Length: 455
Image (cartoon, rainbow, N blue to C red; front, side):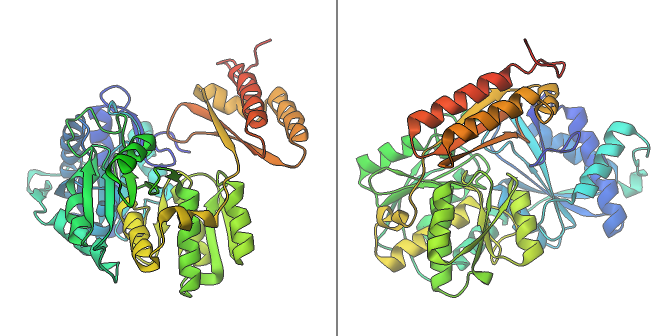
């Protein structure tokens, strides 16, 4: 993880951690790095979600880009994967998305994409960090005649929605779907997309006001969608996060169908169609044991990566796989998209529902979920650094793993986007794993800010 960039771009509290100056400097440095790779006067697409700070940060990063000679095409409010797709469609050299994904409204972030719609390479992010933080290379300041210009893409939303519709070879007429837009980017696209495919839709939480993004709605609060599905007697529901790059679902009974179960449904379907390349599914270390059991039974190989869709994609590209994702709902269909796309996942799911004629609850029975608990420990950078070398933590993990007696597993990892250390425990008995997770979390919380352990 870099000094500015985490596993999913730059992220922090807007106007506090992610300041106007930082956004402007990142814009200037990004223009320099992309110009070095692609030539003078590169074009950047800039998209944003619905946070109150997004306009401010868009203006700041646009100013930085233009001052260093880059041209900017403003996309307005769009999902993150729309930026990745439109970069290639419009022939731009790079893309910027302003979003903090599933985080509360006070956070915001900066994600950068290259000309092929992939997130920037680590080496390029490190070069940007070096320019911004170390000042070893002075910021590029163009003459007045070389300053970049700003224009607006009037058809950005239509072009993106039309592309997603083209990935499905069947209409969705007859399906009744509840759609939770999280008061985020999907608010601008969901109605046109799903109704355009023929579904009867109930559109919920699609009235963003700048501060209600992800607030008691969306993929971080799927229980709300479950109630709506039951009350409205919908066939299913889908929920997106703030920038619509992840999707979770609920079945007709209002029960959660998480990213792991969605991956099982997609992998099974693609394998039946002969489209699951190398019969392999890419997942992360946080995926439920039940997903691995399903894959084994279905004759599907699995590859596990570190948490983060960028690592899933790296594995997919490196070994030529077509499907991968995370329990959180980041799912990558490499045939269609270069990054996780929540609405694309929903479109593909609804297509399977329509073709199979089965209820979602039945499709989700492909995979049995093992009890899993997650405890988040607030952590400073020093605590994260001390985690790997803490003898007490290591001894506690060994003791608790022995207590699980081979019927579960423990995973401890530092969040790449938030000041948290995550403790995940999985096993057969829910009460046991909750006790194990809390005991380990208490030990980790004892890591002192200075990297030493409290007595």
